Every structure is written in structure tokens, then in C-alpha cells.
Length: 454
Ligand SMILES: Nc1ncnc2c1ncn2[C@@H]1O[C@H](COP(=O)(O)OP(=O)(O)OP(=O)(O)O)[C@@H](O)[C@H]1O
Ligand SMILES: [Mg+2]
Image (tube, rainbow, N blue to C red; front, side, top):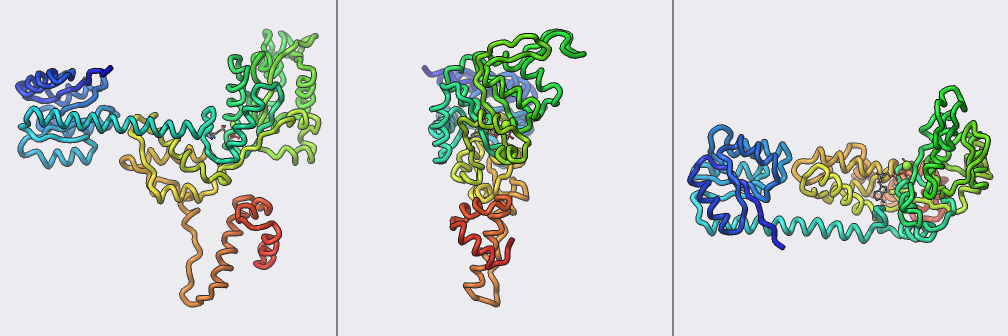
């Protein structure tokens, strides 16, 4: 089925409007007309046209002013300028501003049809491209989790294995690595997917309210308890409860949670009896729970109960291969949201993105791309559109000396710099630093001693 393409013709000459209308209708287009830029602007804001044909010289609002306002107002339709003798320079300016094409008046029937056909073909290709792009992204994604990194693919496998079970799963990873996304993927792929997924951030609810938030309360349980309240466990009945930032749960409540998980029943605050529940519990934290257990901040028995199955998400700096894919994905997402054609990331900008350590992980990358799209000119994100701190990361290089040409000394200086960076990136963790540097832990220790770094 081919749908009729719609064209808005804006021209002050009535004859020309009429002639174009008749001609294009015969070619199978649907046309509407407007007599000047102002009227045109009002009409194109109300309806999306496949193309807008706009004269340059008009009273009221001329073609260039119309174009400027249309682009400003995010009118999505491509605008083709019609320039009469003497307005070619303006037409070129319009092209630079963002007009799609231009055609010189007077034109023959074939010419205008050709320009339109060419424009249609270009639009079709552009749509196909973005569809292709999405298909490629689809192959590298699992339930909205974009990745082609092998460690992540292993995690996709773990999700598939565990999703249908009732086993509690503990999701670990630095901030912004996608823990919540994984929790949703487990729910959405499992047999409980048609039941509720309820998420609660244990760190965001005041300690004294968390218990009644989770388990509910009965009327009169405390001063403000004017009526019964259903807790989140009951709201998630049959489905999944996601306890985010579990490491923030107060100790007193940890005991109660453990009992709920073992007995599979809850007791609302102030209630005399317990109620059976059927809830699958997932939890997540960016804290080092092992350390919290050792320091007594987190109960060991609860830790073991939650940790029956755990998924450890790698930080973004350990899956650099995902950076271009994710950057493309967020670019497409935000271009679409801003109703702009998909932008392109220049190779130099991509180098910066790949060299940066991403302490805020994927969330930070997402924010950088969104910001870059706002700042960038046209549809290209260059290094200039990236935050300064990010550009610095790749830029610092040990300058080559002019005087002393000893290779040994230059190598030492470079090694020292790389080790310093690796340690900074891992927060001083030597095992991880050695991994990034691709040397053994022992040779790292040796080099640290040699260079006197501590
Ligand atoms: N692999 C991915 N593909 C696409 N988007 C992702 C991916 N990982 C994370 N995101 C996006 O990054 C953002 C952060 O993810 P999410 O909230 O799941 O992280 P988190 O680990 O729960 O972070 P925090 O510890 O700060 O709560 C979200 O907008 C999410 O959609
Ligand atoms: Mg989260």
C-alpha cells in the first residue's frame, strides 16, 4: 500500500499555487496551499507534511523567515525552497540553515517532480538506515540491555537460567551499571511477568517508615495510622519485589526481612496475625556487602539468604567495546525525543568517550550524550560538545623530551603514568589495576617498588 504524500505549498502568487496544485495532484500527491509565510507557519504547525514547498520572496513573512521559524519550532517536514531570479543567494543561505533542497523558478513540470522524487528517495533511505541501526542494536540487546560484551552475554545467560525460579537474586555493581535494568529483565522474562514488578529504594525511605512501607500496617498501629495500609510485599503478590540499595537497610529491619524470606509470610505493623505471601525477591546494591558484613553493618545470615544467586555487573570501563554501541543507542533515543535527525559522533569524540573512566558508568554516558546533543551544531557531536573533564582524560600524554632521547627513560615515564592512571581508576585496587594494565599482580608490585609509588 502506498499512502498519498502530502505537500504544503506556500507562495504569494495565486497562479503558481494553482498550477502547482493541479500538477502535483495529477502526480498522485495531496496538496494544501498558503499565501504567505505567516499563514504557512500556522498551518504546518497543525499537521505534518511529507514536504513543504516554500517561495522565497513573499510579503508578510518571507521564505527565509518562515524557514527559520519552522526550524526553531521543530517542524519535522523537510522544506524545499523555490527561488526566483535574484534570490539564488538567499536560497543557498536557506540550504545552510537547514532547508532540504531548492529549485529555481520558473521550473518545468519534470523538474519539480524530479526534485520531489529525489527527496522522497532520500527520506526513504534515511528511515531505512535508522531501522537498520535499530535492528543491529536489537541483535546486541537483551530486554533493553544493550551490550555485545562477552561478560555481559554471560549475564544474559544467567538471567535466562534464573528468571523462572523463585530464587532470590542479588545484583551487584557500581552506580549506573544497569542493576535495575537487570532486575526488570529477570522479571519480564520469567513466569511472573504478567504480575506486578514493585521496586523500592531502601535508602530513600526514612528508617521509621520503611517497615510499614514494606509490610503495611493496620489502623491505629501508630499515631498517624488512620487506616489499614497494604505494604509493598502484598502489592507485589504473585510478582516480584525489587529491594534496591539493600545495603542501606537498617539492622533491625534486616532481621524481619530475613524472617519474611524464610517463612514466606508478612506481618503488618500492629497486626496480630501473619499473612501468607508469594513474592519473588530481587535485591541490588552498589556497596561492598562483604565488607559491610565484616564490619557488622549488614547481617551475615541475611546476606547468605539474598546471595543464593548473584549477578555481578562489570563497570563500563571494563567493557569499552560497549561504548560505541551504547553511545549510538542513546544518540538515537535522544534524537528521537528531541525530534531531530539522528546525529553522528565524530571519531575524535568517540576516542574521548572510549578513553574516559566513567565513574558514573552508563548513566553518566547517557547524560553526556544527551548534553552533547543539546550543545552540538547541526547533527554532529564533536569533541567540543563533550565536558572538559572528559576530554582531558585522553589528552594527557607524557610529552616526548627534546634533550634526553633515552628510550629506557621515556618508557619508564610512560609506565609510571599508566600505572598511576590505572590506580586512580580502580581507587587504588592493585589486583584490578594489574588487570587493566594487562600485567601480572606480581610485576605490578615490582614496578610500584621500582618507581617508588605507593
Ligand atoms: N546496557 C544498557 N543498555 C541500555 N541502557 C542502559 C544499560 N545499562 C544501563 N542503562 C541505562 O542507564 C541508566 C542507569 O541504569 P540503572 O538505573 O539500571 O543503574 P543502577 O545500577 O541501578 O544505578 P544506581 O546504582 O545508581 O541505582 C538507566 O537509564 C538505564 O536505562
Ligand atoms: Mg538503581
